[in-house]
Image (cartoon, rainbow, N blue to C red; front, side):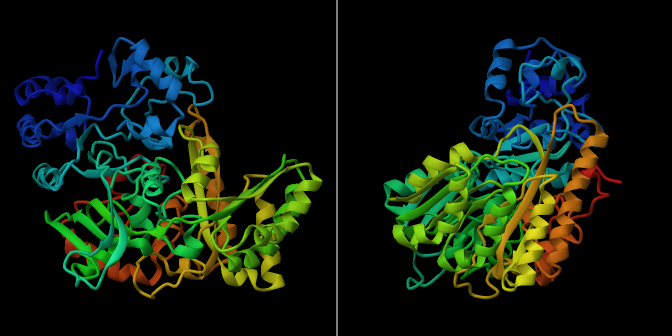
Length: 576
């Protein structure tokens, strides 16, 4: 049996008849809006109003309080693909971290056991509830769709949320009883070697790609390979190019040499909450352009398209090193990593480093130079009978396809993440190095550290051109760690997991008191988040927010201009 909200896809008359049954399941504004409002919205959109249903709903006999017939065939498909990002990204009611599908404060969820998706306890011990999945969404295809959504929100009082690919560590792209704007299907890709931002003189020209906001990085990298160019982007196949990644900062393991995503973007096409479809670049709407380059997604409007500078195809040296971890062997490894960090940074390495592994790339060194650079780590890992590969690859896409899919983070498992930007100054003295090392080893009983060497360490940045925390510009590492909890975790366990991460992140803050954190990957309960994410840029960001969103139509957790944790919009977060 289909969830009754699927009937939203029908013609307006049928929709008006059947929504009365569905509306009874929802208690907030989305349910209490009049039938004529919803019917008119559906008709205005040409049938683009759709039902947001939990991805696991076909497996449950009780969905949103109603007895339904289990769809065994559909359930089997979900079970087989539950932890696959390509499957989740194409389904509106799925997020990469499933706690953001749930209403954590009320214990409402519709999840499978990611460790065994056939485990019947998932659907016998729990019913399927809507949780934080928006009950309705618009499959955005153009600016008019967004403008219509804004008008509806104003008329009805229904809150809005924005979702792209569902890579969200902090629940900003979901929201109980919201109307969601889904930009997933905006997937156009084009290359223009002489791109001139609209309104600029012809002398302002860039070798650039123009990307629909929903274009996945894997699609973009495949396109770039065919066009003999390199696009600086995310480290996952299904992260979307024009959503939160670029608007929040956008790190890459090529960022040490070529900058963050916000350094690469030269134009946005965006529908702002005042209803205007705008082009923002260095020549028009310059304040909005600055705000979109680091102020964060779901804040200043719905971005439909970005244009980003590209590089020629790059030959890369790759170091991929790993060993089997035990209780003690990460300690010498992390000591070597810490002591070599500044040298590697100056040499142009970028990559990811864990407690027992390292994968880095370098576009500047020769193979012989790369081998010499990595020799201390190679010697240690070889002594452990570990795996060592140092090789040359002809392009970024070659590296990406060989190394990234197998190393990507698991999805479908709830995870709490915390991060901090670790300043370069911490690596310039013996005392600083010792503090970094002691911090890393202190994590090990709780969680393995995850070091992203993805700050713009060597990039020639023009001060004041982007709005993310200035700490990006004087940091060597973006350091993180995470802990997971299972589908059947109690509220107490969930709270304890978040609190554990917050406590571990505090040790990062202690050695970097004047630094900041990455908005997209910070602690869900980041202390003094305004200072951490934006620093002195926040005042200007807030003024720009009020200019383009004077009525506060867009709001998200710890975003610029947010109404705060006590707002009804955030009632599903675990709070004191």
